[in-house]
Length: 248
Image 1 (tube, rainbow, N blue to C red):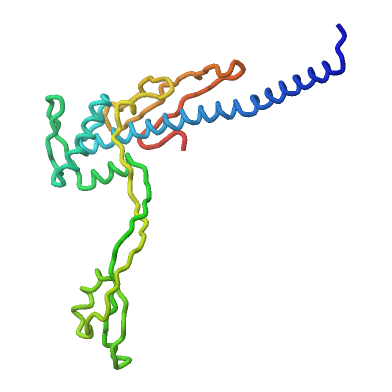
Image 2 (cartoon, rainbow, N blue to C red):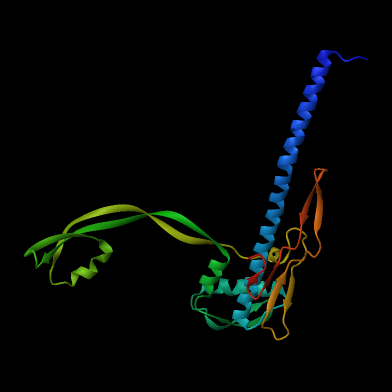
């Protein structure tokens, strides 16, 4: 059967559309896979950082690292909750978890360091209601009273001055202030597991207990098929040993 010119044109259009679609797939699918690989790498390293920090907090509280991550996590989280509930819960204290008593030594800035370690720095704009005062202060160089504008909260520093002659005017002021704060989260049991393989991270504590290392459980390249023609690949997400990260 001989193809007509119309059939040839239609066939050419189909071929062109096919190659355009193929080109789009070749360009965008690998990018999507790279983003997926990066996502798992970042999440895994985030969890490794949190795991390491929890163990460091545990050592500061008890004097040693704990090979049982869940026990260490529960104790550190309980210590933070206790300090938040009672600001006087510092120095040598006892915490009971699962019918077991733990002796801890909590330092003054423990809660603050916990919140800044397990938290995301954020900013918000707060509307502040304040009062501006116009006060009269005798200026000896001018030989007369001079007007000064101050915030109401600063008035006490002028009231004891013999040259202070009183308040002339009060004016309410509304201003917007940028406030820095941390969105704190409590590490949970998922911290102990790689998000890609769902295997536990490897924890190594030196015999004398002075050195600690956490390692990715990925020892060989992980490959997963994507869209028939492509593959997701991931190698070890690294290690943290005594505060030094392999990816820095």
